[in-house]
Amino acid sequence: MHTDLPPSSREHVEVGSVAALWRYPVKSMVGEELMSSHITDRGLLGDRQFAVVDRATGKIGGGQEPEEVGELLRVPCRLR
Image (cartoon, rainbow, N blue to C red; front, top):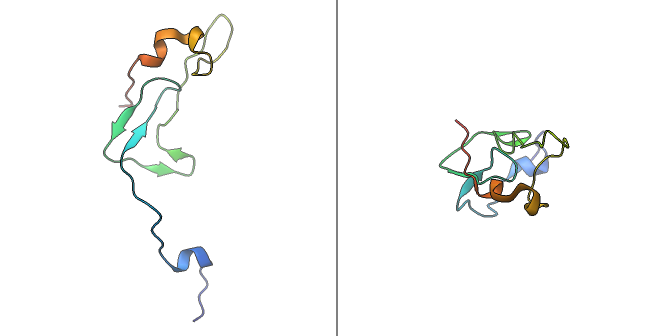
């Protein structure tokens, strides 16, 4: 059989299933569970689209320095 499709497109192979889908609109904040979403070439639409920046230092808050961002890591966030 001859086809112009690459080998990866010729057959369907199931490798797993999705148990839950979460999006984190603001880096290092609590995310939101989704029922569905659009996937782009850059990943899940709206995921880590924003970040919290310390105006004094210009530093982006994140989970690597929990003592600096404190309670921020527990704040829920939703993308509407």
